[in-house]
Length: 133
Image (cartoon, rainbow, N blue to C red):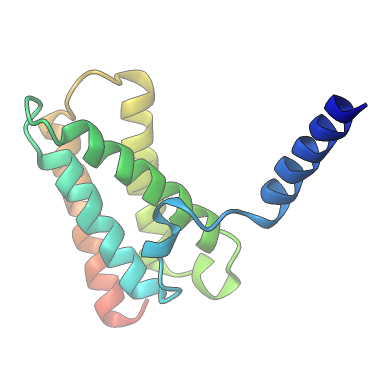
């Protein structure tokens, strides 16, 4: 009976955390200020992309960037005040390109052509943020 109650409690705890969210991980990086969060995400992604493949920090930077992407998308994708902004739609395009690459080629570095495209999109996002769009 004790084991059953312990399991039931564990399942209930997991369900509550799943429904309410957990405050661990990189969610502390998000400030709620869309412009600041977007610029921080771009900075994190640039760091992860530009590190040399033999760098001991490469995997940690990529892991942190993935968590940051998930937190960012979770926070802003349903925010109507942000969803229509040029900066947000362009940022989603860049994120989709990065995700597509790592899904198809997880062990390969980002090609020069894709890197150039992502940098152009980041520049467009930064320009749109300066304009307030």
